[in-house]
Length: 296
Image (cartoon, rainbow, N blue to C red; front, side, top):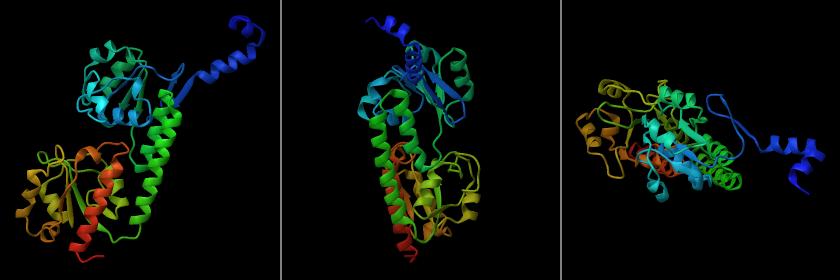
């Protein structure tokens, strides 16, 4: 029996099947995205989004991404559509995507607006808490048609996160300054996911009261806050030279107690399952800081 004839006989069933095939998902902004089915040609507009899509089992649907998308290794071979803060709109359109996944706090809203104006579906994500990473995996899996793989990855993330939370739940607080850049001097504010990681490890972000994701602060403000630990990132796995610039400020508690540490930004500043690797290092650094402070 031909499908068309079958549908004529069982119209209610066919309408139900068509409705089930459609994907309707709300993004971080509350906007509802409708797709006729799982996306087949996805462009991601941030390195962590490409990495997360692979982690969710949907990497084969990825046809383009931005500069610095270097993990996992297959991401290095994808066509580039500019940098996350400056998207090449023509390059995006040329890839004929049926879904664009964007980063709310990293991509320029004006550029996302232009993509939407071209009729391209733009789905925006913004994980601000550690547990949001698991939810991000599940959403990406749904959008890419890899729900089973995504669910497994999300479950593994939640289990590992719960173990980290349990291991650090009752440790003495340590005041932390997290430095993401030197010039300008930048840190993380309260809404940033790294602030959540600091709390998980028993730390207190000395600039956690700031509402910006990545606020610029002054040296004087850091001196006034007097952090007991300074965690710096930089451009890669090497310890940044400017971390030692703090040594001259001998009245800082972090300097007095030799609590100057480094973490590779790729495992701490990307909203992916690897943030747990960075958080483990962060917790280890704070344990070391507690020993230096005689605060067990």
